[in-house]
Image (cartoon, rainbow, N blue to C red):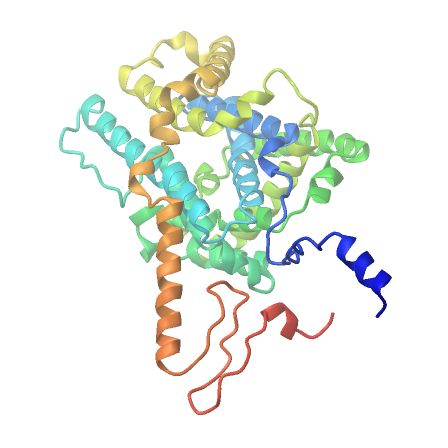
Length: 423
């Protein structure tokens, strides 16, 4: 090397520190999904609101049926599909239920806690206003409307099973048919209703958005009107010939004085009838935002609260005036029921009673940080146990690989992703 080359090397700046290579394990920032709140579907909110209005109207008609064939026909017609529609929607929105912590928490706070509170309130009402002070508070024997909450709990817990079995709807129909001819099931947890309404929930679990789009087509709407009219005419004919108890799905065939085989026949017949009328109902539910769309988020409030007023009106004798049992009186009762249940679904009522219907109950659940630290402790324990047996563990996450047994020399540990075959 000559002297000029050495001088140029001395004048050249010294190389700076080399930046460390970017590790692929460093998480990159991702857009937050919480920035865009999940938008509710107006169709389903509209359907839930209209269904709960029909439920309240049907309950208000119950004392008016005596001596009125028209009121009885309307009662049977609405009862054929109002709860099936509500249950089918519940099944549809339970499709993704699993035993993840946040979903279990939601199940407990949104179903179990309201059941305990309102079953106690309904029992106290029956004992106090019904002149039956000895009536017990029993969480095993739902009274009046609270059966739906215990049924929803059972159905949702069983959702993963119904997602993996073959032919789920026919299987659930077979279970419902067997329940309808099994009087020994008893009244505990209202299991007759849980099992006999089960096919509607299972059908909702396996429905997809295109099914709802299908029933909302124009040609289906045109067919829905004559079908519903024919069903109403049939209900008028069936009033003196059919026991309305079939629509409650509360008792077995033998308990209603019918032969056992009629329970199986009626299970399949009523399922078909209810599904057809439910499709007719969905066909005319508006899909755009309406003045009542926001009330669809509060239908469980309207469902549980209106029952207190219905039963209270029975105990108070509000249905005793004779003019209420006229066509004009029936119209007045219907309008009042619709207005009252609409008010009970309002955001104001939701804010006032959220402590009972949707309590947060953070004190009752372990925090996410506590769960994470517990999980880390478990992984550390597993790593220590593996180390004690001579295994080599890299990291504590799901990408780590236990590389060896005690009899072999340690090997390098590679991420799990690198050990997977391509594709």
